[in-house]
Length: 554
Image (cartoon, rainbow, N blue to C red; front, side):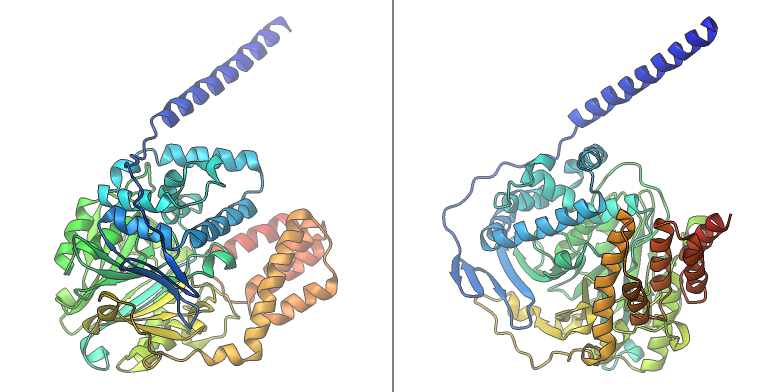
């Protein structure tokens, strides 16, 4: 007994010592965090507000008739950042609130949220040295006008820096299995006029409130090229954009190498490419120089080169996927969320990603749509981006990740680089009107005149009963998820209504099954899970449902 007691005391002491060592290690690591905050002195002056238009010197912000936000800023880094801060301080606060509210929903425990933020700060402790001075200066100047309501999670500058790595952290936190983006490019005999045409859906979802402020940002920097990007208030990195040389960049999450430490956020890398590259070679040089900490595909199209390529990047390697280099008759490129180059395509992780995720099926569906569309123009490109069917035109229900249009897109864009034009969906998702913007007009002095002449009409889907049902389905889905988490009863009529709104979608039955499992009705849960397996879904989802079913039946 004395021996056992001694062993127990030794084990307890060892655990306490280990915890103490870990705590000291975390404190030391946290003390090394340095986001390299630049100095900043605010300039005098404030924006002039006139209804939906705000003006500050040669900078402006407005809400256009379609509901899209527009902002143009010019000058050096600090001047551009300060202009953003002075023009849209209310939107910066509202967007941060939407982000934090979603974080509260995902992580309701305050203690765990603080731990999570502590971990992110340690993981990102070298973020400052991996973001160029210019971009840190712009973020610092903008952050001067951000709210102090969330200072418990860091200063405004620290928070804005961390938000620029949110896309990358999402890879780490969700094992890369983000809802996938889709992009494509055509030129030559695949395009109606032989010129480059690029389409892309950006499927990054942080809640309806966060997604409701799509912003078209035009920057006229004092160095590099003027550019236009589609973003949200506070995000100065580039997710989808085009510069005055007719070079476009769009990013697609991929899965390959596990990150070990933060480096340059991929949105900052794509921003640097857009501001300082005029062709594919220059884009590749910049991408090779910067180290990122996630695996990403960057679709680059270039008027100078007359084609598109994909730069495939991991934390340690980089490859250029250019199918037209081997076969000059290829005038098409499709990019979803897997790698295609010789260097990466046969890697075990990439093959597993193709097997388990929806990326391969979406890629093949885009190929089908391009094959049947003929020579593509902006209107037919919009039809591809709006497609809600599966392979062979099979019905998937609505919101299925196997579809190009999952009714989830943060934004959807079509680029015509030779004309320096882009079409941006006004929402909801890519179903709304695609509003045409001419970059040449927006980089001139004065307030540009927005014309609806070249816009692409909204999808007829918005006028159907199915659209009304989808909106109700999404609301009921949130309600049932909350009830499941709280083990709170839901009226059976509501559950039946929920399924009837989207009867071909596997997840309607899966969500209802999860609810019954949570309240202890395994028989009903199993019946619904079995039903869900009769519908189309990615393999990862299928295995997860089969595992739940197996546990319940045991």
